[in-house]
Length: 539
Image (cartoon, rainbow, N blue to C red; front, side, top):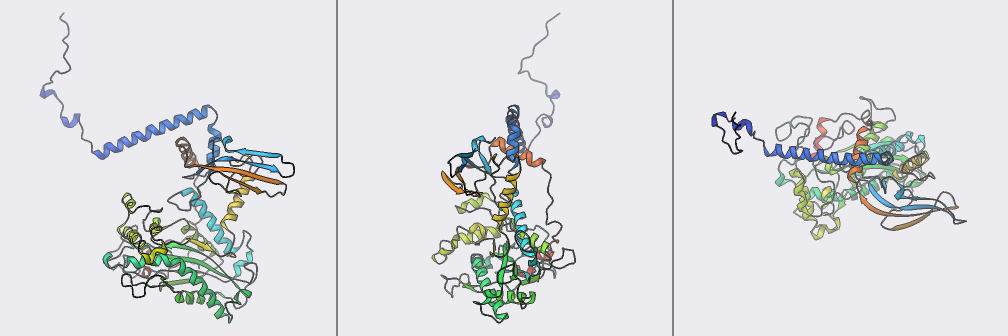
């Protein structure tokens, strides 16, 4: 029987028996190929990280590491520090206990970044929002070292807006936008100028830069108006009443800053004293409106006849909204209440220009960095204007290049008077003390004292600090050194797994927040809380 014939590899197959090229080599777009490669790389990376976690589990180090990472609460960029801390008896010199960061499962002490911006760290910003809610609520209904009698004091919720710098796309209540169209939710044209070439970008940026000075001048005029209405002088006002407030800055879609403030009248010693009989909500309402109308700030280095921006004097816009705050729980048809105001202000405590106008959330070193970001034309032009104005000598004191990512606004986003309520530092100290008393907390040493260097101890590069503890006979000596920011790859992978397993916590503001009014979406999202400030504020 003849041997079987062996065909070489280069044997030619008849054309009739070849399958069609459309079936043998299916065409694949370049995007699909890149996507498949990215998915394959992500799976391979995930497999490597899982393998490292398996090794840690085999050696018994996975559970302690997971317990330490769980204290971060899902922080996106924790700070890693190394060092030690000791408690020493001052009389005998005996070391009572010593804590070393090398004893922790991660080999380093991990501290939450504490960033308030939602775009930078959602976990820390959520905690910041909860603390802000407690701070504002304590000044309205008491608690957190504030007496509950403060709920009976006169208080209003005020909104101060910016003037117009040119017509913009909006959603007015009366009908369509001036452009002739109806803009849906999320339309990038909302807040953008109808005619960018005629829009006063220089005036808009300079107004944002002078907004902190406007607020400071407003508080001065407000005290004067209150004293005038009470028949007193400003010097003797503090013998009869004290002005307390807490405010937050919010960005409109057109890129302008406006202020929401809780203004309250107390007695001469603060919230613990009863306000005088003449201190009423109506008097406070009229004083806020009169002070906002009188507030003026002049550009110190800008001549009055400047024709480029036409802005030598800055003032608030005509749309001023002042509403009394009631003490009842919020209902859909009820007035502005304590819960509603506290939730509303806390919501904007974690938002900046990047969430409303679409800018960047960090400072720019070079203007060319904008090429890596997907910005709207309006936001890009605002940043360019701030960048170019920053090199002019008459605007050098405003440091506009440093605050170009904030569209010129260089003030604190949130401020409060000393007597309004508690402080964020006090709330954090209470939380740290509570965690320190919990047994087995990985962020605490065995003596029950928090190892967080921010809790009474300064943390810096090779910085040694000493401080007296609550006991007069104990001396605390600490030495902390910055090691880096962010978790190692396997630690970050484990933190993501732990965060994914945690149950979602309902937002406190969902029950007490009214839906956004369509007419407010063009300039600022105020809902029915500041419904009187409509789309006219953005034009």
